[in-house]
Image (cartoon, rainbow over the protein chains, first blue to last red):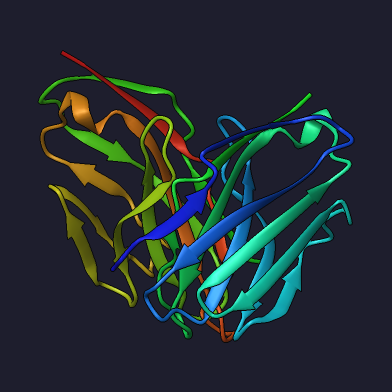
Length: 112
Length: 114
């Protein structure tokens, strides 16, 4: 299995809703990532988990809350989002030490 | 800090034309270099990579050579197809930490017309 899966594919939520994005990989990778991508822009790193511990938080607002329940799963909990948070949210994983990242297909999030 | 510069386009080519997308980087040490491709409505896919100077990455007819003397990693394809229409991101990773913090270029949008 060489893919990263993400659910849901699309999500529409109001500013008062709480929702979660899910990412899963079964490649034995020990690093997992959340990115935010706006249209026609490169992905922006949000969080990095290394060996199930949060290694990097790129000054992301607290309305985004990551969670890594085990080495295969990565969640992103969303609460009180703003319309400007509408974007494609990408998950990725990699082996340690200098290997490429494998990306999932993304969740297209719309905040109304 | 590390950075990646690439031509932003958009680039429009006719089918079977030759493609070059320029990419230059700034980094300390010896980063790994990547080209990722993003087809419309999809996530990013690794297209090719090179991990040391003079390495040539190749995949699906695309090639790029790691040139340390010019700090470049230009993407080329001899004959593009309509199915190559996508956004191409040049990227680097310094690999100094226990995970990959990848620095992406701004992306180049390619449209291939029949």
